[in-house]
Structures are given as structure tokens and as C-alpha cells.
Length: 389
Image (cartoon, rainbow, N blue to C red):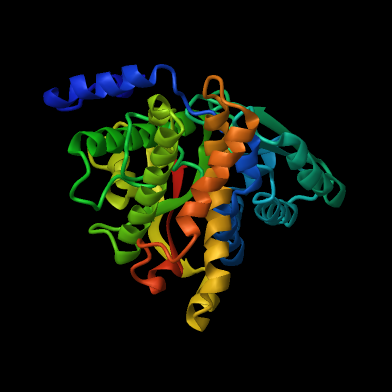
């Protein structure tokens, strides 16, 4: 894509970005389905949405204010982008179906779940098919495709949602040695790299919105929640950057120890927390985007088990938990990348893969400067509606 070739990047950065991209050759994002099984970051976001009924209430508002139009919809079509294996979808979908059924007992409801073709769709059907037994005239299907492409034809979706999925980028814009989740907050990072990653994240977000604008019906709306951070970054975010940096340095060190240093450009995780300002840019005055913001706010909450262990000072239990969580989120990606190293054996893949997390959490990591900052997760949520005539 154009943004990966240095478009709109300052002139003195273009050759550098091109060089790093050339070194990476064709390194597009390929997540295996193990990631989908460990999408626990979504669970906290979906749980909050269910508790607050933020999507269901917006749906109910539409139905009550547009009863004639609602009755004419056949079917009512719901789309989820970044569905994982369905474990994070079933609760919110049940709530949406119940909302529709409270106003129409017979209206057909079509649910289309989207994720990459490598997603575990078999597990998704096992979890979601019971909804078809619980409710009549509910139809469930999947589409395996990147949500950075148009997934549905124009004007076909009534309601869409996405939980903590859009932090995945289309590609790795260039090698980044310091951080995974966000290339901000440390002064010694290469400004050319932070600029390239920031531009990738901004361009991908705008593209995501433009594609959804095409797919939503004129009355359609979409809910999105994603990991974020404030400006300036909080202590917790800075500590997260340090942990990401430590993980990246550990991986690079292991690759070099085993003679695979030429492959290090493949290993930055293609995910990034966007700043609040980045999330708002597509809606700024003068933008050609026709989606209208209805809800736009930050939120955070404590992660219960981690908070309990920190408060009790139980490091013997906390470190294995942090290790397991980190391994669940990043492990499948790194294992898949290790397997693609030419000539590497399965035994060596497992040896290096295990060493990554053993070294990160063999003792209290240096990046844990304030345990209290590990308690909270920071998110951003928004509802947008299609304002096209």
C-alpha cells in the first residue's frame, strides 16, 4: 500500500523506510488461529458493553424512533469485525437478539462474523450455533477476510461492532526495536520509526472507517472499542512501553544467539495503541468522512485478579500470571514467525519460544517500576452513525 512506501513521510525518512521495507520483503501480517483462542483483552471490553447495554440501548433507540423502517428490514443484519473464535461475541449478540425480539418476534436476524481466514471458525460455530436454538429465525455465517478490505457490499449492514481488534495493523511499516504496542514515550526511539508506525496506524484507522461507511445502510451505526492511551502518556503506559521494549530486545537477542539475526525485521508485533487525537482525526472539520460521532470517550477499569495479587504482595503468583498473559497475547504470533525461519527445526522453535518468556519473567522484571500501574487497562469507545443521504 502507498503508506508503506513512504508516501507523505518527510523526505529524509523516505529512503530509510524504503530500505527497511526492502529488507523485510513480503512480511504482511499472518495471524494463526491460536491468537483467536487467547483474545482475553476483548473479554473485558465486551463485558463492559454488556453491563452498560451501550449497543443494545442504541439499537433500541433506533427501533423506537424508526418503527416503520425497522419493520421493513428483512433481515436485520448485524456484522462483527474481528470476531476471534466467538467467545467474546456470544454475550453481546444474545443481548442484541433479545432487544430485537422485544420488538419483533419473527423478524429474521442475520449475523455475519468477520475475521482473517485463519480464524478458528469451527469453534465460533460451536459457541454461536446455540443462539439459533435459543431464538427463532437467527442465521449465522462467517467471512474470512481482512477488515482492511471491503467485506460487505454497499448499504447492507444495519449494525456493526468491533471489540479490541483494530489495534492490529495491516503490516509492519518498518523494524522497531524498542516497542510493540506503541512507539511513543521513550526519547531514544528512532523518530523515523515512530513516524512510520504512527502514519500506518492513522491510515489504517481512516481506511477502516471509510470501508465501514460504504457497508452501513443510511440508518446504520457501528460500535468500536480499542486499546488507547492519553497524551501525555500515563505512568502505566510508559511502563507498558518498557515491557514491550524488553520483550522485543529479548527476541532479538535470542535470534542473534542462534544465528537468525537476518530475520529480526519480521518480529515486531503489528499492533499499536492509537492516541485519542489519532482516533478523532478522521472526524475533524474538513474531512470527507460521512460517519457521525455519537459516543466518544475514554474508560479504564481494574483487572481484578492482578489487583488482588498486587495488593496482597503475592509476587510468586503474579509473575506466572503476567507471563501467561503475555505469552497468550504475543506467543502465537512469535511461534508462527519462528516456524518460517528457513531450516529451523520444530525443536528449536519451541526452545527459543519458551526462552522468550522464561527470560522475561524469571525474576521481577526491571520494567516493573510501579506495580500499581499494572492494575488498569485503558480503552476508548465510540459509536458512529452513517449520515449519508
